[in-house]
Length: 282
Image 1 (cartoon, rainbow, N blue to C red):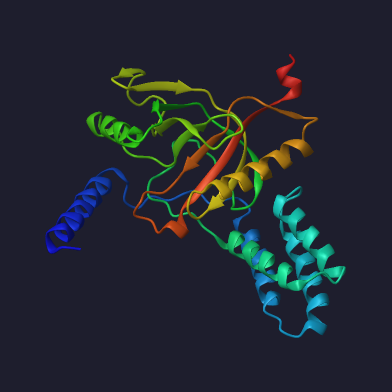
Image 2 (cartoon, one colour; image 1 turned 90 degrees about the vertical axis):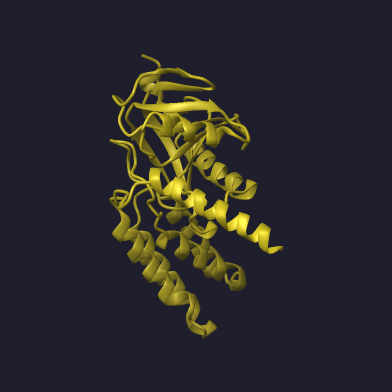
């Protein structure tokens, strides 16, 4: 790369860093998940045993560790269900060259903590642990919304800069049904009484209703494979809880990190809005 091009590149990066630094809050912090300590303890129980090298000991050690980890996780935990399946594989003398990598990945999921570059909107619930599935209640909120395209992020960025609106996390992307293709992108206002609803060029400030969402946490770069796995986890939850809940709208993807976070540290949530069937029929 020529020196002039290198200079332009790093100059652009520096400008971006200054721009983003002015909108991402200093000292931002996400509220801790109520089961965070239990997830950490479950990871520790599994981590102590996956490195056991003696195969004659490993089976009993693994099954006992899996039982201890399951006991620490919430009732109806998706991760606990995965651990139960892996325990069956271990007990059946399945190939541990497949089981051990799966357990190590679960340990990494359980230990993952999202990096907070900006605060959540007021009243938003804590982030869903990676690999877990849970149903969460959201308050109503105000958001700047635009059609998703190659310039959607910058349209929204210029809107909040012009209107002196602080950046929050996450950025919301409404997805097309049964696909991973974004239709809309939104920056969320910190409070529902901040600013005024209405059109601002290609951006519209909307008041959006709260409600229940089935959510699963994702770590790492955004990819079709990661989104497909996340969608499958949520669909599994919906199939298991179909007697009480039904889908209430299109899926959405919540992105929590800027390009200045290492890609392997990215955190996302894939969510589908739901409603209780009993209340829907009233």
